[in-house]
Structures are given as structure tokens and as C-alpha cells.
Length: 283
Image (cartoon, rainbow, N blue to C red; front, side):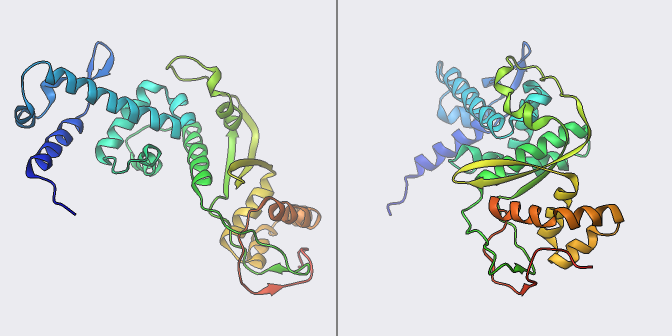
């Protein structure tokens, strides 16, 4: 491969230093200001008008594309927060995690951990939940294809292995419904927060044929799947059987809940130890 000429490398370095600059606030909007560009880089590229103004347009449009991509990846979080405040947060994130990929959605890969690391940032519980919903959708859709687990002659496996696409979410506000209706809200202001549920609800997200299925879960059902994702089947059942009311519910619903998880493709094919002849819990 022929080595790139030195002038091209220098040009790329100067352009990168300019494009990496943050936006400024002027007249209540984020915009590009050539006066804030590194003057040595700008000098090598050329100070004469209209170059600085053209670079400012390119710089501003580059940030606009980043903001649009970030809003698309975290739509619920962005709309509940309000786009002005979200864009400021996205800018801070991108300055600390400069984009390295040509694939725009990938620039958001470390956003959720970044937000959670901002200990000085006030995040009410409903905003944390919105972040969890958006992250769950991203992880589910980006997961690779994995072959379904199939029970063998009515027996079940000792340790179930969740698919990478399986995401389990506990919901206290009607945020999934809101997420599906975001296009009906205009403007940049925060969208109205839905009413809080009387009690928490569970949801499972799983990828089937390139789309996301959302499956409602009972609270104990959600806890069961979370326990099964982390522990062998007997241990998971023991964790949930401590209270008599839970044990009674498990005795009645365990088989149907396990059948639903298998039919929906929660678990991936796994070679492991087999136990039992059915899916009932034995004390």
C-alpha cells in the first residue's frame, strides 16, 4: 500500500482538531464559532474568507448529525429530558468519547454507562427508567443471532443460558407506551411524563426475525427469568420459594412461564446437564 503524502496527514490532523471543538451558545442556540477554532490549524488551512465560515458550517452540521444519531438511539431519554438539555449532555459525552466509527449508531455505545457515571447529574427514577428502556432496545436489536434452546424429551436443562438479545425491564411508569408514541409530540421541550403504575410491571424484550418482541410479565415472572439468567434452575427456584405465597404461585404457573420463555426464544442452545422429567418445582 502506498504511503499517504505528508501534506494529507497534516491536513487531516488540522481538520480533526477543528471539527473536535465544542459548539458555542449564541442567541439561545448551539452554533459554531470560527473564533474558537485552533488558530494554528486554521492558519495552515487558510485564514481568508470564506474558508472559516465554510468550516463553521461543516463543523455545525457534523455536530447536528451526531445529535440526531444520539436522539435516535436514546429517543425516550432524550424526549423526556428535553432536546436542548439532551444535546448538551450528548456533546459532553462525545467530547469525552470521540467518535471512532463510520457507523453513526455506534457512537452511542458507551452513552448509558457515561450517564450513570455522572454522579453530579440529577437523575430522577423515571429518567433512569427511560435510559434503561432505550438501552434495552439497543442491546436487543444489536444482538447476534443465536440458535434457540429446545427441550429434549420433556426434560429441562440444569443451567439455562439467556440469549444476548434477551432484555428484562421493570417498569414503574408507562414508558414503553410513551416510547411508541413519541412521534406524536412536536417541538424540543420535554414530553409529558405518564402516570406512575400502581405497582411495577415487567417486560421481556427479545429479537425474532430482525424485530423486537415486547412481552408483558407478571412481577414474579420477571424475577424468575432474572434468577434463571444468573443461577442454575434449582437455585433460582429456591430463591423465589422463600415466601409461601410465591411458592404457591410458582407451583401453578411455573410450567406455563417456562413454556412461554422457550417459545419466545429467551434461551440459547446450550450443551449442559439435564435434569427431571418435567418443569414442575419439587420441594
